[in-house]
Image (cartoon, rainbow, N blue to C red; front, side):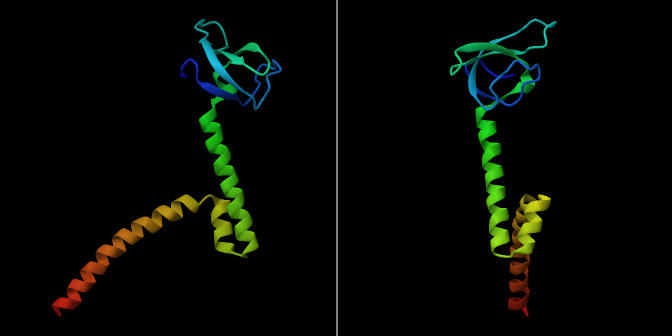
Length: 126
């Protein structure tokens, strides 16, 4: 449940109320009536109006901005991979394997570092 006064972004219009999708607003009240389909009352300053909306129609602005930044980053990586003819990077980005590859590299480095110390100690002993 979102807190009162939080800045939100409208992401959908399930009940076709002519909500301005993409605009920001603020949560000004909860709708506590269990028989009602709406969860929040929001205020949209640019329209100078209040709307009743379900929880699925709104999202926190910080989450929307984070998703947009990830989308732009992914597009930039695709452009870079295409311009440098880097097929491996392109396939990793397109398949969504980029995060898992980075995590695997980190674990391999930790394991390989321990193996390296073990090999140095073995060679020093011989």
